[in-house]
Length: 161
Image (cartoon, rainbow, N blue to C red; front, side, top):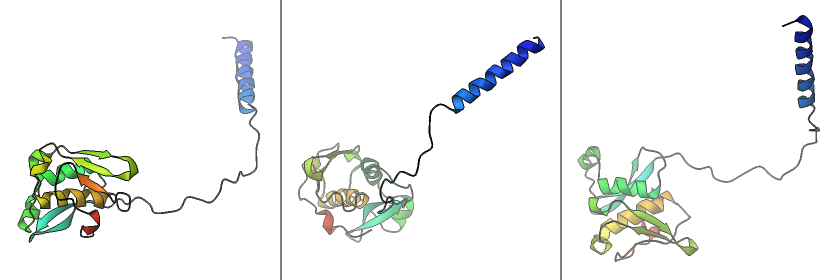
């Protein structure tokens, strides 16, 4: 490449950079948009599932971080870990209930649909399911039901996490 050609190419690249750099964007003042975001920050705490000990429901943290409700219910159907069993925890949720479907209806109502026949779930299993989902969604889901299950469990009756 000749020196004249290289020089013209270098000048052309320089001019292109000047044109691109001055593409019409003009400086402006700060644009006010309102107050900064506020409110609670999403927690990174462990998910709690509800297991049974001494005939009562107890929240038991699982160190897997935040999960979707169906994933937490899968942990519930898998039952207590070996360490939890040594501590006296059990579960009335049968493995056949998994996978669960979590459906949202109008008005914020959540319906949990187990894979097995819900009418056959023991009362404490229904409580375990409702309390586990309610603990994941504090303050947002006050109406949670297990499709076809009786009796109905009120999330407000769940022991606090």
